[in-house]
View: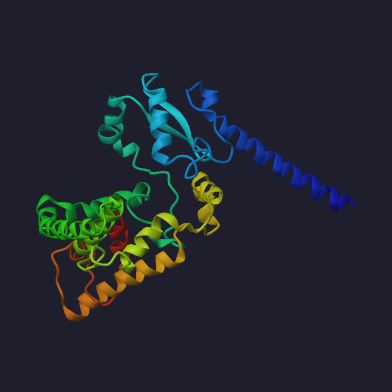
Length: 297
C-alpha cells in the first residue's frame, strides 16, 4: 500500500512538473511583454495549419498584423518560442553582420535514424558551417552557368508539352505542368538523369515528388511535437520522412553513383561535382552526397 502511494505521488509530481514547464514555455513572450498572438497549447501560433490555412498564409498574416509595432514580434513554432524580425535593419544584421550567431535553424533533424533530414537546410551550428564550406565551391557562377543549357532544353520541351495539352483541353493545371518541368530540371542538372516527367506525368520521380508533400510519416500533432521538442525526438529515434520516399532516394543516388564509377561516366552536373568534392573514388556512398543533393532539391 505504501509503495503504491509513493508511486502515485511520484507520477503526480512528475506530471505537475511537466505541466508547469509547459505552461512556462507557452507564456514565454507574455512574461517578457513582447507582442504576440495567444498560442494554442498544441499548435502554437499555427492553429488550423494545413486544414484551414497554409504556413505562408499564417506567417504573412502575422507579419502584417505586427509590422510597425517594433523591431520584432514573438510567436510559437508549435511549442517553441520564436522571433519574427519586422525591421529591415534587424533582418540585415541577422543575415549578414551577426550571422555567426544565428546559423542554427532550430528545426528537427535526425541524420542517424532519418538520414534525409541531415542536410544543409536543417543542420545546426558546426555541422552547418562544415557543410556550407564544402558546398560553396559547387555553386560558383561558372558552374551554375554551365547548367543553363539543360534548363533551356527542358523549358523548350515544356513549351511543346504545354502546346499538346492545350490542343486536347483548353483548361490546363499549370501548377502540375511546372512541377513536372521542375522535376525534369532537377533530375538532369543535379543527377544527370532523364526523369521524363514532361512526357509521362506518372513517371516514378514525379510520383515520389508529389508524395514528399502529401505523405506524412506521422500526423500533424506528433509532427508538431517533434518540431517543438527536437532534442527529445532525436533521443527517441523518431523520423519524419516516409520510409518509401527515403528508400527511393537512397537507392536512386546509390545506383547513380555506382553506375558512374563502374562505367567511368562523367557529367556536367551537380552530382559529378559532389562526387569529386567527396573524394568518391571507390564504389561507396558518401553521406555528403545525400546532404548536398537534398540541399539542392
